[in-house]
Length: 214
Ligand SMILES: Cc1ncc(CN)c(N)n1
Image (cartoon, rainbow, N blue to C red; front, side, top):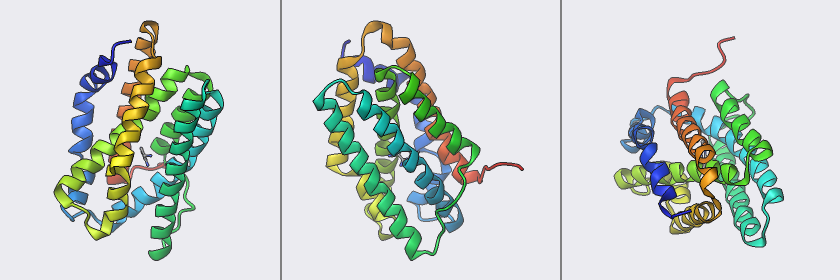
């Protein structure tokens, strides 16, 4: 599979990617105008997302056929664990409960992750992971370009824009590109587009407060 796979995936999803990075949630966060209520909703829901993300990684580690991939995925699990710690420390400081139910969109996204890890091909699952992490790298890099390491959000900005995180995302993309075959391409494209849409929807959900109507 030529290394253009990743570029092609990003090119096909460009409108979604641009809408995601320009989303009012991220724009207001980067300009210091985001309400605390919206930010706290993101903290609560992303915490739920990352909890299930660890289960997703556990399934993927079990399926990885070689040591190189297993170790790289294990690094991701440690990074996700660290994300939980950042949320927990913030929640403690702000007396914010993290014991919330996932919204329909959060539940839809995490169910999609777990279903892909359990029943999709390995490269589909790697696609979903690469898309989600690349989306966070790009979204938080755009925030950092405007805001720097502003104290209110420094730990998150640092976490998802660090050179280590950037090289891990690149490594994951290389793993995907080298393992994907030509027949894998259609399901990979579908997995990438669905994940990019969920990434957009997640920001939109925390901005609009979208939740179960009953
Ligand atoms: C929705 C979402 N996507 C990605 C990440 C980065 N692990 C996250 N914390 N949340």
